[in-house]
Length: 171
Image (cartoon, rainbow, N blue to C red; front, top):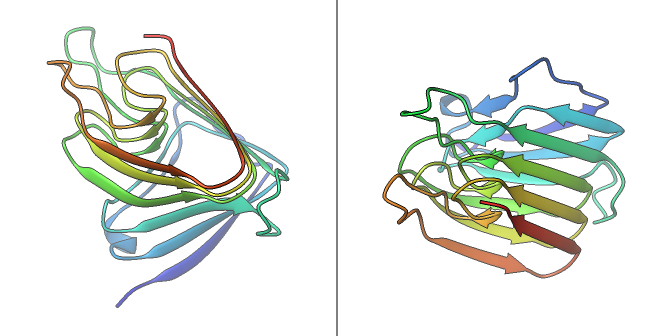
């Protein structure tokens, strides 16, 4: 059975490196994160079989509610973990069903995509509202597929139907 879940973040502040991960408990689930206040987490990962929607608490596509997500590189210099800030963890998995419909989203990643796939992972991302800033400081896309050791990385399908989007790659 599909699981439907609304999760409200209201002034959540992270401890170093902590984030939100849901996988088998919400497999084939529909999770909506409603943003209130100023939230700061380490990463937001989900299983590719789930659907994740991020929006303002009012659900109206406004920029109210802020979510800052920073996925710093970790692991070793010769074996870094290629994790996305919002989307996939390290691995060749495909992630779809990610919709940003509102709020102010600031996502930064060092190896995987800021929003989308982790290492070599492909992604399907839809943006319909809000204010989205995505920055990648490594070899992956700001919004899209995750980079890979060979440089090939994952494919991506990005749809922007509304909102304001700023995407920057510094790698």
